[in-house]
Length: 352
Picture 1 (cartoon, rainbow, N blue to C red):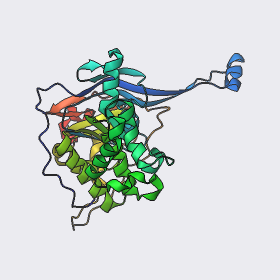
Picture 2: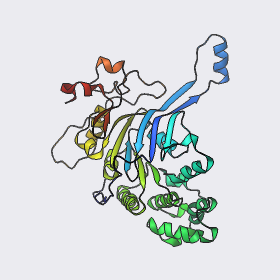
Picture 3: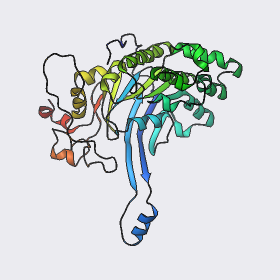
Picture 4: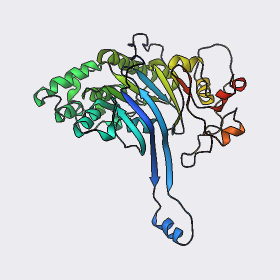
């Protein structure tokens, strides 16, 4: 990660007493694959086949306050992108509730639901796949605000030009198609499209993962500048803990669909408590000249089709105890703003 990412000019986050802008309570998402005809016939003959259920996200509790950047980190398949898509309204949750400005989204009237849909936008990982190749930038960015009545049709071109300037692009690019841009420029178009609806919360789903490192730094600086200018709130989803550390006020670590640790960014980097968080930090590149042993996380991420009993991380944890194999740890408060789900927290001699 480039050292040119600006991090010292971010605004202070909302005070602790403020109500969260977004709150998740027991949010879960399951994907079920029904039995096919052959399996149903086999069950009639005595087989005991069951529908396949993927537990993508399980019982997530999280609060995001206005003006802060919350990073969500984990390996591929941990459910972080699914969590972001539920928050952005791309897919519905299977259980739990989502609150926006203190109101349950499920109970909102149509006008409130529309305000929520416009107020929470998403930036996707692959800008080439998320931008319509048959539309000009003018329509990609400007169509939605006109349709929703945020901008008069007569001022569409003016609105798009202002947004392109805001994300560092020439307003004349409005007449071009997505294939005429570089990857970094396409991602800036995706950012402009999200900003066009004047959101308060933006979900960034691996928003810089497909970019070169030097371009990553530019886009991250753009995110931080827009945060200052527009008082934006971000949920920054990434597999790269180093990138998240540059931009986030608070970091949430997910493993197999669950939050295993949550803390302010400096606390996560200075004193992580969960073994999984420690393993992720150990894999980060460092400029330290001293020789160190590289120890990757042992084993592979278990299948969400059949998550292990007890603590989901216990098959890969070097400190696993018999208790870990049968009892799932609770996500408990370990300090100011610091939550962790690990039985080692009850045994200081081992945790230290």
